[in-house]
Length: 530
Image 1 (cartoon, rainbow, N blue to C red):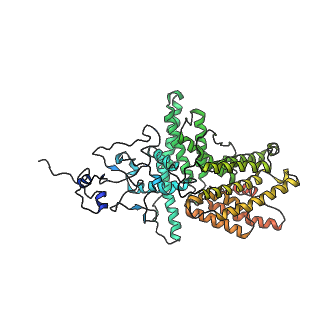
Image 2 (cartoon, helix red, strand yellow):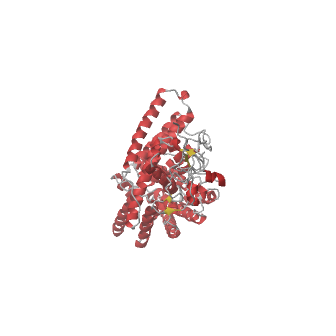
Image 3 (cartoon, rainbow, N blue to C red):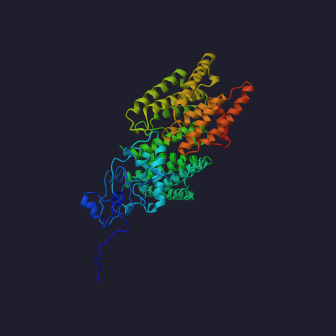
């Protein structure tokens, strides 16, 4: 006999639960919400997807209709909702406030079956939530509602298993790094079991993806390959490599970031050689290109191996919107580093370059002006104020000047007057840099991440104990706040440099930190200040 009993849910809907009334559990929506004119959220897992289903492609900006048989997912950034519907899961296990409205411009309903199979489990969704809310905000120079580490990488990952596993690995390792720090402070943060499984799977899937991509492109004429499909494939591969590179910065005992960084450069080069890597208004490719440029620039300032020498990766000047508010400074740092490397094999390069202290100062003054002007149009969140941008710009200005003077204005190429001018400028910039660093905040993740490179340069000039203590304290605080411990090796380098400098002073011989770093990294002790 046919069962005529109406189908009912096994638990109350979330709206009735929130209103603290008894729900009739009618499927697909309860009648009490319907009578009150309320939108019943249903009974399944609720997820929230910002800015539509996808950031690119045919589904850009669109929501997906929900049929009566689909379990709806909405609200709360890929967090599985418990029996307490108003409770968002925080890293510490405590109740956290709702998502900042500036990051939730639109709410889209997505059928649960459309999520990748790997996100059907609550552990994986929790990791993706952690990446979304914590890691992504730490990856940008000022978190905002258009943070590309959130709004480009996550949609791209839903179509790319290697990238999805990479960001799950990123989140898992970050949680464990924070839990280790929290345990020392007697706070409760639960670590993730076997975080390496996601990273190992990402690397394995990435190798397969690269092989398949290369085979497809090798067996078919370029004219037969849809450029948008090839470009999306390249974007996913490059994004996976960049995420894996950043995964290696969570713990201080890894140097595999070099492998992923080199691989990412190769992808850019091969994509540019065969198919157009970037189409007009291709924001994904532009973002990935800039992130590779940023990582490569910082890596090159402290490492002197072949991966920074055999070819300079230069940022395409046609990019429409910078992903870093300090990109103008980074362009100058790349130029300075490139000249310094060329001069190692051909000293005449510096003599013929026309570089002078006044010329460098003018370049960095222009970069600071453009940075401060850029802030007026850069969409930053309320927590990222103009005062911090201004102070950080001053830190980059003076740190960049010091680095440039040390790298390009070598004593053997200067007469006494120019050498004296250089040393006066370095002392002035050092004083201003420490003054700016004294006022900048490293006790907030949004701010701390911006200051590690200026802090490192300050450390190379720190000759007094109080100066060295300030650098150590702020670098440690930055690592603690962000959960990225890669600067630990930079601290080891600075301590060795300070000891050697003290010895050289007794011998009345000044020590050049760049020469010392070249010797240090030549022994396999690489470090990344990023």
